[in-house]
Length: 98
Image (cartoon, rainbow, N blue to C red; front, side, top):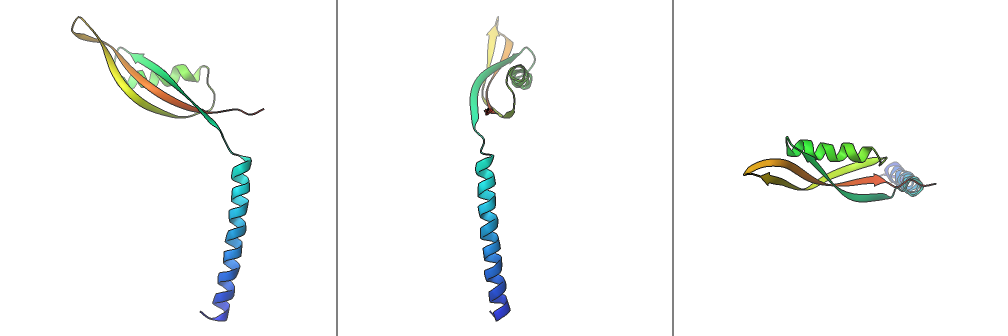
């Protein structure tokens, strides 16, 4: 490695370290906290609609929903026929700070 290469390497290392510090400070300032709730959506048509219905209902009272994970599907059977599709969903949303 010649003198210039060594200088350039040292310089870029310091720039990157400083950038990492700035990124860390920014991350701490915008550190987000999430809450996770479990809800159940239902549909007479499909599992997909049941999951969508869970999210649509949650949106009415929960703000800043970030993720949803379907954790379980099941069905209700009446008279040997499927009468209701159910989707259990974990919803995560950002906790608002005052």
